Image 1 (tube, rainbow, N blue to C red):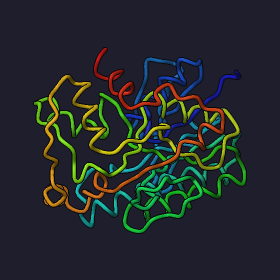
Image 2 (cartoon, helix red, strand yellow; image 1 turned 45 degrees about the horizontal axis):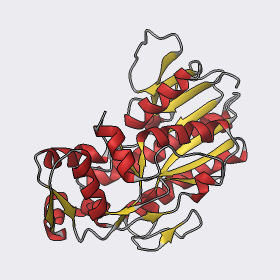
Image 3 (tube, rainbow, N blue to C red; image 1 turned 135 degrees about the horizontal axis):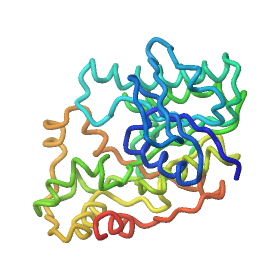
Length: 301
């Protein structure tokens, strides 16, 4: 495989770090886009300053970049105040447009562009959602629709695609970070009815999927989820089991979650049963297909 020079927005985040590790292990160069000047002791890892709100990007540091992975965006896991909702949307649109404009309007040799998206685009449903399913309604769906629309023009020029990410399982952060303290105390239980579907993916698999999409001619849109979604009660049971802690049968009622989390409660209360066939049909092979094995790998090392 020919060595590449890959730029990553959101490269200091959980997924960005995992992707960077894979790329460096494969012998590629990585440029992480940052709002401030940073240095690295690894000659293959560099930082480029950017200000996506102003459309500013250090084009010199981006010279000879072969591929771009776009992950940047304010965390969804925060209370959805008016200002936070604006930041969640604008951070994604501004970052994506800045990178798309660079590829389309600057002399460069970018050949591949992979942009993050989210399964939040789909409606809450117990039906299996595929990449061809229609978008849902509500804040999350609206954000994702606009996010993907901002990325679409780049694919007239380069290969790559969009990956709709599910619940990323990692011991280092992400969705589990907020659940772990309660479960580690032995107070874990289902959230809401416990019947809502959750489409998850192991951090190793989602990082590998982004690298795979960057290096291969994949489908324009793929779902970044494992092949076997589970309902929330089953997921919580497996998490308690992996931590060797008891599981409490009484679920946390939906109204309590809404009191604590506000509108953001829909993230855990919505039912998202999403197909992994788009990734599998592209030739990607999952290491973690079952949630029990995925969770065990994180907490029983």
